[in-house]
Image (cartoon, rainbow, N blue to C red; front, side, top):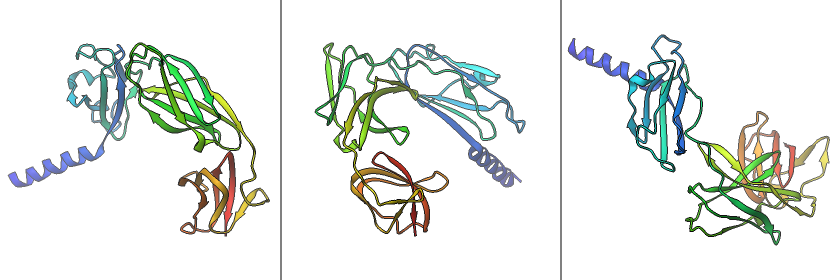
Length: 267
């Protein structure tokens, strides 16, 4: 009986572990505590939150046994700029709601941003307080595409200049770029800057709203591209002139390349 009891205990805890999910928040502390809305578990197992870890250490669980609770980061001794990783474990049939984050990112003091010689994105900062990395983004295919992460240089009190080669990201027509910083996934973007490139004919002749290709697909120049299925699932992406699709079923797909968004047929 004792052996059977141990098996039951093991299986019960295994089931609990499998049904537990978690929310992960990462960033830097900026003087604010975290507030969580905590619904009931729909299966009658108490409140949704089961455990909270702050930088790997368990936060007192009694504080989460209510419909809302606070994670007191100041009480834990955190200071402005300290790195945080908060894990909120919860049942799989409910999800706590994070009502705020421990501070919005303070925008790095970008003095100037420009495109230099049609090939370099250049920006200058001064008085950077926190070492948030910069992310270089381009508005492309009706969305902001993130290309590169640029680590922040040590603040010396002087003006710091960053320079990124964007030549391989340029497409036909008008190009729009920006840089941004993130803290707990909250973006703080710079003003956008623009550069225009000559328009080029890149693909095969369009017929009936689709581009018909033989294999392999020749995009006429080296360019960034994305290939999606009819349900919007990303199948392939790359930076090349040739796109190989013979491993896919024949049919229709959506292709983003250069500055184009089009439907292609592969038969």
